[in-house]
Image (cartoon, rainbow, N blue to C red; front, side, top):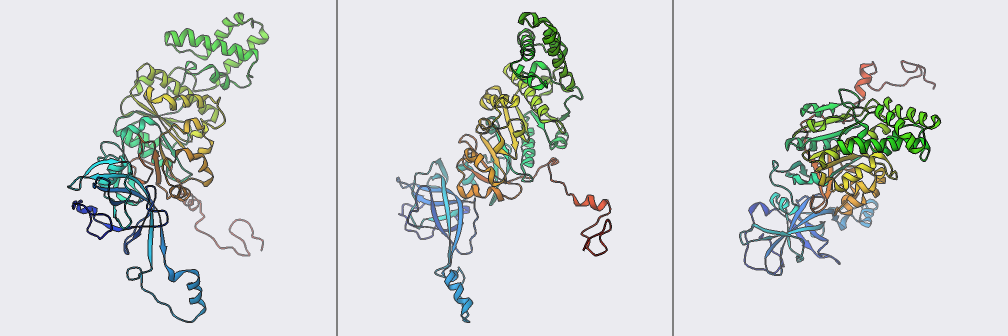
Length: 539
């Protein structure tokens, strides 16, 4: 333990590694603290700490074992009786100079740090961490508070000490010398990335893509904004545009509900709808489920002809409009032969589906088709573990639209995807618009700066993040986020700074002003009665 005097009961001296002995201050007593959930310490003059930083409190447990309690800084306050409202007013009114010593020499000026205990490390007689456990030791007032060492933080937070063994995502905010390396198995528990425009969420997705590529994890990304196009090329992946370069999706990958939703003007409960649905389901049973074959739009039209008598819908007034409506699926350029996912998905593969310019209805159909193809192949054990990701996923899994074709399949993957060996990485700037059933099953979360009105929708994913930490979300710096998760993924909510990407960041907010300069408008021009160069100013 440290050599600073303390009223904590003494036992045999224990050696703590030298780098631990960076003393920040000592625990103080208030009306309600210290307790097992919240503690306060007086910060020594000249020392600095920030919200989210990790500290260690010295203590002795009931067996007289030396313990270091890892705690997270919630807030810091200053106490200065010379600067209360009355003293400040007196100096303004009375012409009397007032000087007082600074904190290092004053007996009444001090700062108090509020901390929340997270875990405790039991030390052996050599000062080495013997085991990590939940907080069960109440430190005494006067106990020494230390700057937590990287080793202690890594062990108690459940991080991996070796960046090559896990998902290296950045450094702890306020402790920039401590690398945040998540257990690589977090990808099996699905990932959520949220943040407002320009907060760094797509940048984080790129860092995650690089880390997954290093482990050889295949990735299929539905790219609504084109943010992963350059990074995909740089990592040796493939960019595909729906309906081009051989990338099409079969009707056999869609359910009957998907097909009906894709055909305009088909109303539920009508004979036309019943006939198209019945023909599609027949094809699924006869060709896809029994033989593993795909079928085309032309096959569906012909099937309507053959099954119409079975339903006593052989009259032209019903059959012909059904065939015409089903044939309208040919207008979708991405409906055709199945894509050979089995050959394309190899270790290290990145397949980016460039969906820029497509309607939301088209994107939902594409997502549903890809997801069901992947489910089918994964269920047949024809694929390794894969990551299926998309940005702006509130568009394809919207709240309060349970019958959305893409919502249903994403719900299923979120619920049992790890058994299929499919992991989700979903990004959104609007979590309030996302299906809650999916949101709550994404167990590793990167929370970037986001508007305050979105915080309520995230209440279930904050994990043990303190209220003070959550309140910082709307003003979080670009590239900084709070990482939370379940006990199996992220042990405690942690504020981190995302590391630098090696690939191109396609989601960067463009600098608009050089474009005006190229077009002859440089800088900010003065106004005058004669008016600017174009037009006349009325003064």
